[in-house]
Length: 453
Image (cartoon, rainbow, N blue to C red; front, side, top):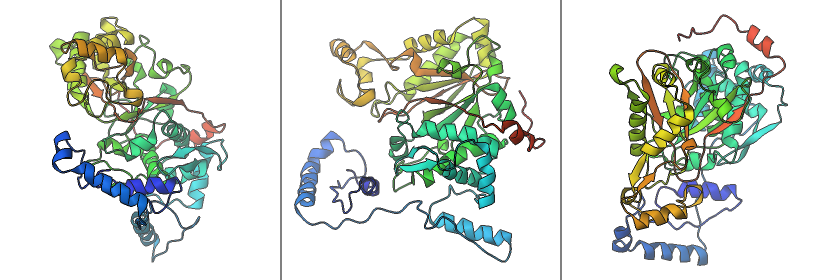
């Protein structure tokens, strides 16, 4: 392995019950170029380290401890409430139980109130959160929800989001641990639930000002930290990180469709009268403004295909993953005016988002890659026969998810690119509401932030 990934390797080994693991570490901090391997005799170095690790007693450093509480109940005190909270904050920060923002103290009473947001038992397991593999019980999710500032009525959305990232199709282990700059993006679909939870689906849907938008995503990140033990420099090896690591929650602006398109939850196989949460493994945010004299589908296709070409990563192998196109209501006007379907737009961008074969395989040989992102044989053969052949940068048109979001006004669209290695996909889960749903909402009427659409 390259230098810098030692702690990640030790942590993963300990997770599998292997202690005292000897590591073979290259004296290099990044993936070497082919000529560097020979020039620096890296092959010999790694061989010597591997032989030593297999044949000699090597005392390896123990894996770092991340997010492990020493007791079920902690007590903090001070001369006043503010001092007690300050003591708690310091303790949580030292133990890496925080995202760095002020936390709401997860007292027993606060957690019990949060648990009113679900009919599930507090001991029920929603999934296991990688890389630590800790069980995300309803109780533990509720603790993190309190810390994030959630209200009890947000629990159904949060539980569905946790289930989505914990499933194998999202590949949370890869998302958490990779050096690739990937993190979840949440998309809520269902206008009734959007309105009742006061989720902003209008101007600035990805920005601040609405408690639901800000705290549900934050709670998911705290779950990923405290149960998954995703921590920079230990298990999370991202060089820059990403703004998406704050886990934005946006809402599909279903009103923009005016009945011309099905919402994204229906496209993903769910009923129209059910609300869903989708999780996108997002890397890039590439927005475009469409000038007033060019608000048409052809402009949208050209702009987004160009952004998709920029995002295509020849080294990370993100061919075959799910990308996302967001359309503002102003941009969707062109789609409705020209009577174009979602499939029309997907196919048009699929056809436009192509590169010559010699560029497609730039930096790697045809047939490289593995797993779900491996280039199929027929495409490899086509590229070998004709280096100028145009290669689609999406596996299928359906790999481009499309949703309307945001407020009216200037026409905007955004291409949100996905991650490569590991095969992490766009995952959608249905949101189950508790029996006391109406009471939960009635208890907290009057505090909502107004939404302008």
